[in-house]
Amino acid sequence: MDNYKDYKDIANDLRISIINMLYKSQSGHPGGSLSACEIVTALYFKEMRVDPTNPNWDERDRFVLSKGHAAPVIYAALSKKGYFPKEELSNLRKIDSMLQGHPDMKGTPGVDMTTGSLGQGLSAANGMALAGKIDKKDYRVYALLGDGEVQEGIVWETAMFAAHYKLDNLTVFLDHNGFQIDGRNKDVMNIEPIDDKFKAFGWHVISIDGHNFEEIFNAIDEAKKVEGKPTIIIAKTIKGKGVSFMEDQVGWHGKAPNKEETKKALDELGGEIDG
Amino acid sequence: MAKTIATRDAYGQALKELGEKNKDIVVLDADLSGSTKTGVFRESYPDRFFNVGIAEQNLIGTAAGLATSGKIPFASTFAVFATGRAFEIIRNSICYPKLNVKVAATHAGLTVGEDGATHQALEDLSIMRSLPNMVVLNPADGVEAKKCVFKAAEHYGPVYIRLGRSGLPVIFDEDYDFEIGKGVELGSGEDVTIVATGIMVKKALDAREELLKEGISARVINISTIKPIDNDIILKAAKETKGIVTVEEHNIIGGLGSAVAEVLVENYPVPLLRVGVKDSFGQSGTGDDLLKKYGLTVENIIEKVKNIYNFK
Image 1 (tube, each protein chain N blue to C red):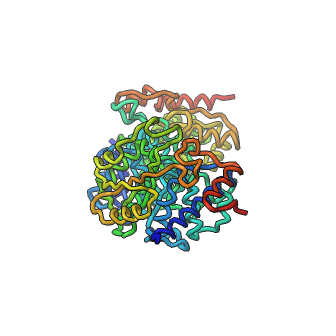
Image 2 (image 1 turned 30 degrees about the vertical axis):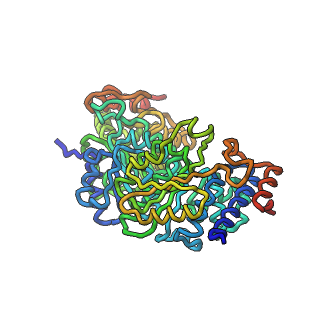
Image 3 (image 1 turned 90 degrees about the vertical axis):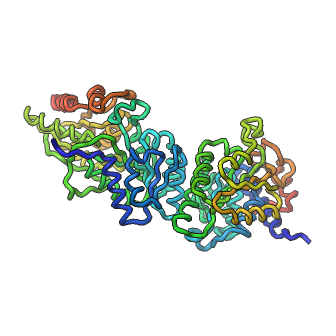
């Protein structure tokens, strides 16, 4: 018996939505969206205290997609969660759509922070966590960071701050798929040892398989028990996860599939082209 | 000698008063709290003051996050770092989502003085003015600075407040009714109009006094809201006088002079001359020596007014 079947099904649904969205818009970032499906599923469909009928609820847990180019994964999750109709997904990146190429908190219900310029989302998540501390609220703040993203200086300004102010209500996932636009991290600009870097900055660090629900849930629970420190969950992932020809390929960072590729991808995922 | 107050000191006092009235006010600084005067707020409300260290990008990003959760953050550092180093965070994390963050930057302009060009922001008004949703304020004295801070807190959305290091003569009475977006006529005149902002307003008034002795009547308008600029008061002056001289402690590119030129050219073109720093960096020196060196003087204002007065 598979304890996590429901969550795996949701993650798979997100992948089907992502492929459909990108096919329809003929634009967007599949690789880094597909690598984060389990993390986003775990947060939105189990962990986070949110209310789709009241997206700006003061007491809600917050989620900041600091790697804003993975917007399709969050749009897929938000629509599945009921923040807006699934039909909206067909309008990704189109003129006057509520679904911008990168997340827009003013336009899309459920998006907690406008992101897209790398590193800034983490800094905003810091501010949300700090506000929670000031107001003695018990909401938690989650952020999803890309691995190439940690090359941004602001990430380390923020890392220092979160540790200094003991923001233990902040849990960050690092979607460590090993790639950025120009190639593998290790070839473009090595970020390792990334766990030691965060440890040295005073963070609680957990390393997991980012596609394994048991490990994701355990890490989230562990982070909630940590006192006086922010937590980063370094989630080893596969870029393009779930679509064989996209997996571990730099070429699928920011390219939409054509019709044939879309069919092949959806076949593998057990889905079909919407509409 | 007349009483002087630095606008940064007025800022510190205003923050302290605001903090008492409004518990949502939080203040962030990047290791310059003694200079920016946010330290005054910290003394009264240590629980709502956060030093981010020397990290201006995170200063602004954290302020953005606080604003998403109902706080009214005032983020302070020197104007060069706030609008330069952190520009893109102001753009993408504050202005684009229209978050309720106030960037109150001190040590703007040449009158930073001895620290020299690296620390003298001469382009901040230009940069901030180009951002959608941003309100840009540049008070002329301590009284107006305080009122700017109060109004900025009442206004929902991003505001940039430009503040200075040096003591300034007091121009306004305490009962002056400052309103965002409204210029004020500080001296009547029929011949030429001087539109001034910030520390140069007092010099514009001094120039008006000198010109009167020579029989030239110059109207003086204080524009403390650089954006949204008061079109009406500028166009009225354009129609009623021969032309306009703009005066600012800022590069002549992109600041008050450019903003006034835009209003005139699209609506009612009249002669315009700009007093400001002529597309150069500053240098070390006393504030007064620098203002003289770069032509930000009463004499230069008078000369420009006469140029327009003598236009055919």
